Length: 271
Ligand SMILES: [Zn+2]
Image (tube, rainbow, N blue to C red):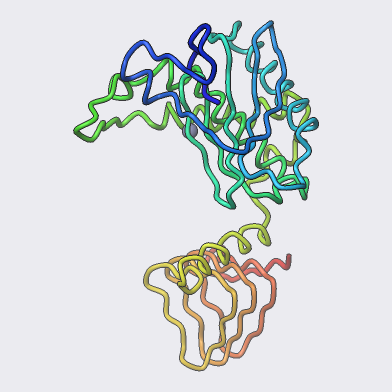
């Protein structure tokens, strides 16, 4: 499968008008699960790689169709003949936009919880928004590319910033996320979960910002310290997020709390 046009009369063959088009059209082969929907007469494909047994493809394309419809409403038309979402189910994250396709990376459990599924829909919408913002309206550096050198641009705040904003917003407009999910930038437990996942993967301790002072007798478990945090003697923190500039007083114990400093005074909120 590929977003590249198929060569007429030649099965499993794609055509590219030039080299830039070729390298912008990833091709995926293997044991694929392909789901198709049509919007404004144009075929759209969800191509699952490594699907396993727990992906609800019918539900996914129903929701993707609603997202595509919102984008079409915003932009006025669909500027391609077909579009392919290559969904790599590889326990990784992120995605990459192309002119008529995108590559998404996700987890086999992405449909397991509402939070992770809405996260995946936001990723779908983000990469798809790039059909316009980046792949057709773009800073000069982002195409045609100089393949020998860095293609520097200071304009990612437009290319990625506006895309991130509208990606999530159009999922909200499609009725697939709630206001709370749109505005929520992550709950404290979600933040800690992400931080510990990354720490575990990289074999590092949990985040500790710059200039933190932790007394030797303090106990810190599964806790993120931002910058300029002081933890005094005998204090203990378990699953906490400690914001910039906080001093945790001697001997105090906190569990599952966000600690912030307001006018030099420490405030604790449990979560
Ligand atoms: Zn992006």
